[in-house]
Amino acid sequence: MPTRKPISRRDFVYQAGLTGLALPFSHSKLFTPTVKNKKDKLGIALVGLGGYATHQLAPALLETEHCYLAGIVTGTPSKIPDWKEKYKIPDANIYNYENFDTIRDNKDIDIVYVVLPNSMHAEFTIRAAKAGKHVICEKPMALTVEECDKMIKACKDANVQLGIGYRLHYEPFNQEMVRLGTQKVYGNIEKLNAGFAFTIGDPKQWRLKKAMSGGGPLQDIGIYCIQGICYTTGMEPVAVRATEGPKKDMEKFKEVEESLTWEFDMPNGLIAKGKCSYSESYNFLRAEAAKGTFELSPAYNYGGIQGKTPDGAMNFPRVNQQARQMDAMTEAIKKGEKIRTGGEMGKRDVKLINAVYEAMHTGKTISLV
Image (cartoon, one colour):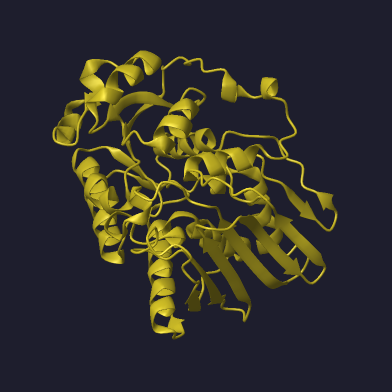
């Protein structure tokens, strides 16, 4: 069997999402980039123009009903001409990291979406809040609970909202897992397993530098498994045990873990198991309940999610997850309602991630209460 070439995280999550996709492209808005009327929409500025902003968020903002791409913030001037042309962004709405704070004077921009390496989330969330802008921050929210507290306080002090980019809370298959699990449609969950893995590519990317990422696959994709465990059960773990997997590439993974497994003790006695890796391939969220198993596989991709229950296959329309997420958050802001996936949820997950790492490094069961 030929050796598979490592791919980027973005390409993996996107391409894997196309596997099993039933609807033809012509049935999706995803491929009709027409800017809608900006009347009554809130303007979003993307901070950081990496792969996720370029290939997912910006195109999604051509589909949204409640928000639009109003500005960009980048440290790479060579990217600006293409973005200006494609999204008709005026010069006045283009910023760099040095003059970012002057965004406070821009009435076109209501929301700042922080799409930077993990280590920069806290700084730019706090700066955006001080500039009087609502904030959406990509996951994980930050590297430490202390940073999360500062982010939450900055937004509260500025009377602006803080949302975390948990797109799957707005995706119908994962929403169904929430319903089936929390409403005990098939009885009590007796076993719960979640896993996400792919073979990571460029060894020089920021995700493999601990100072920027905070860790390896747990920070990047394992967080989806943590989320899945929490929202499928409707509970938060009370303790955790974890084990680091062997490193097959010591050079690539000299700073971060290559893979790991963990077990959460849930309040009702359930043991929920999670795993993630940068050198394997799996993608699932599976609950075994008293009256049968319900699951998603793949569970976490940008599209092509599939699910099944004891009553047959789940059947939901294909959606643009990023558009749904940003629309829901923007609508909440417009109505003065709390964003569903807010800073407290982000802080909880940072606490859980750090507890998993502590358990992994010490070999001990770490209490979460």
